[in-house]
Length: 514
Image (cartoon, rainbow, N blue to C red; front, side):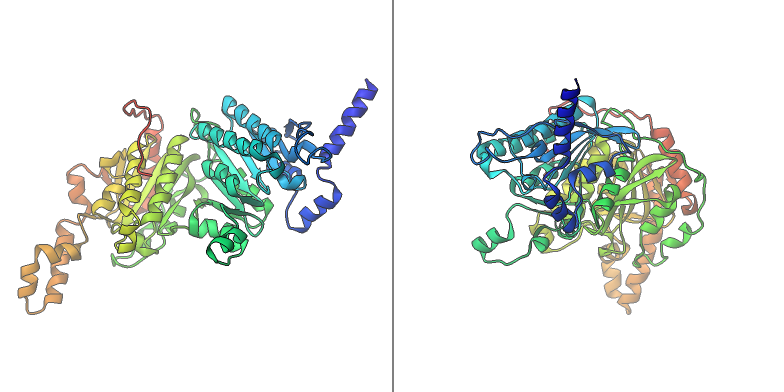
């Protein structure tokens, strides 16, 4: 027995050493932690249980007979975050550059299968040079098996990817199939083809960071949802995001105690929206005043900033918040904002998170670039996401809600359970100025002072039609509320909706306008 235990200790020490002290030192010099350091930081203290530690490549593969690859370059296992179980895999760049081979892929597939069967979130820490060239088609097949499992798990368990190093070619598709992508600034890159290939094929010169760095994917492509300045901050984001999510689609999100009173009134809310309907303001000032302890975790901050989405809590319960941002592009909906909104609402719906929508938008962004880019198709995603969602949906109209955008932003017609409005709400087919131009065109043209007549007619239209009471009289708005008491009204609305049950027609699946 002593000899067997000694052999076990020797093997475990070898695996723990990863690629050896020199490669570990290079990893640290590049500003990155090792795979084991990342796993230990991510999980609750002393909770990690490794599986598959002794797995390695087949020594008969081309050029691999004498290659030592502890754990085949990927650490897999399970542990706890906030006391709740999770599965995790972490690619080890110190071992063969974290490259994915047949057995490396099999280890990832193993924890994917276990996570899906157990109804437990899975977190992938990606730091890899891509497919292992020596293993050829076996490596490519490994990626395909991982993609398939990502798809099977979608909407069943939360899947989170942290890109902490290079990720190129086929390796980027697994992260793209997961629910949340976190990237580390300056050390993580994602791209289908690298700078050298792009230069050879198109003549374009671009650095790896400019092509596929964290800020590129957060602010330009929209691929990333969060960015951390280093490994620790990125992993902290994962822990925080998981605190809003259930373990799987059949469970409810965790509930946290709060000392923030549900009936808390906030006089500042009466001052946020300017009296001038064309003057911008920051909708975050409203969001932070209605959620528990002013804590709001913004999703895709920096991308399509004319729309704000993210997680907060009201009464300790997780809520997804969607809000037009009048400070950017007047809060109009465009292609990118539509994609951002639809993706977030579907994510909330998949994991039983109620959606609160704050509306202040004059409509869809006009222009040939939007039309040629398919704003019709992208805008339809918003309609689809809201109409499909069965979680509690509460809408608050703050100011402008015109035309198709009024419908799109979770109106009663699209399935909002409760629609509230501030007294400042303007609900109409179009803005008062545009409506006055059409309805009172002759009167305006005949006036000795057309500009003054137009302003007067617009004010009259606003008084008679563009106010919340007309919609409320038709039953499209459930209540016109005092802005100061918005948190209280939201809390009460969500409380009565938490046990809501909403059926949809049975079918294989819908055909979303992707």
